[in-house]
Image (cartoon, rainbow, N blue to C red; front, side):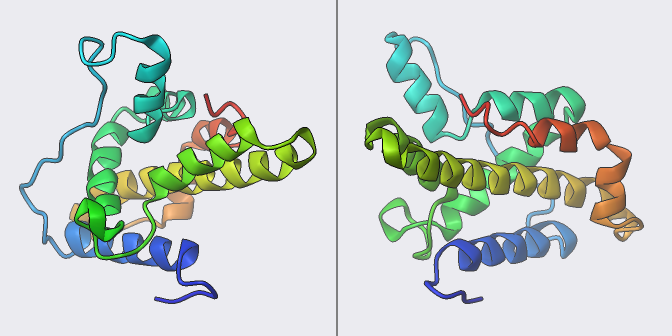
Length: 175
């Protein structure tokens, strides 16, 4: 997989290929992946706890997805494992971008850049989180439909869950 800079689309391609290998081809069969959450005891400061939640990919928009598709928690847990596998070497990854870190980076840029540049960083942050949401939903689709030989397409599966698409259209509610 390769795109112009070898980052965003390359990473997305590697994540999708790894999910397919793990789920459709059974490489991760029987494995359970931890759901990443923050303990209030470890982060008594509310602002620090929120920052850590964001580092782990826990945003309000993700809670909306869980409301419509409770199984998405397991999809996200598997996706987060794959993101870490495909992430930077310092985190034990293979050298690509860590999508959760990209979301956090764009969010930080938005918070600290001059007002004139904020729309750019807001859009970039929305793009990253939208990609993350779709990957969570795609992982959930694979987990549900792979045992049935992917008997329906991802598009049809999403159409059946139209409320999920509506919630993802509101990615401006990142926090």
